[in-house]
Length: 111
Image (cartoon, rainbow, N blue to C red; front, side, top):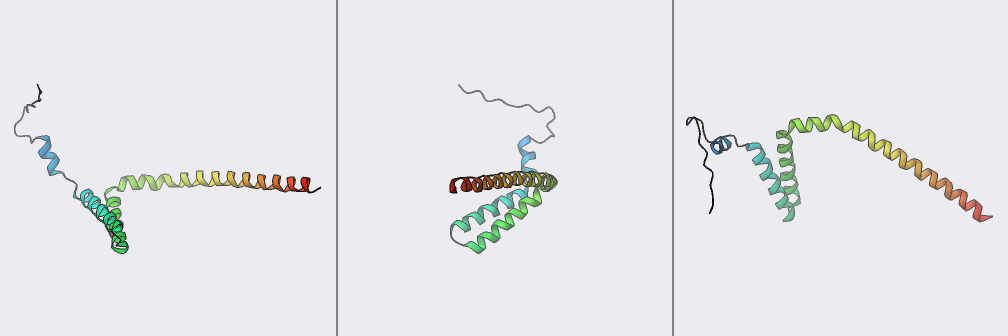
């Protein structure tokens, strides 16, 4: 036996949640998703130029819709770049140390 919950609305003048959801459909998201899918399909079909244009258009629409997220990424990006630069500096220091040890080992073994 299956029990189906039925919701009772106190105020019948309020629209049902599904009706409100249908009215507030985000057309920009839908267009961005469709354009990205179309671009991907064109790329898979071998139409590189038109697929790239469609994918770039879809990405631009998606970024247009997500301005707050893009803004927060833009503000946090410099800290990530600083972290990567620090990490690359450490790697460069380690590579220099290994090169110095290699030269030292070669001089010892050459004797």
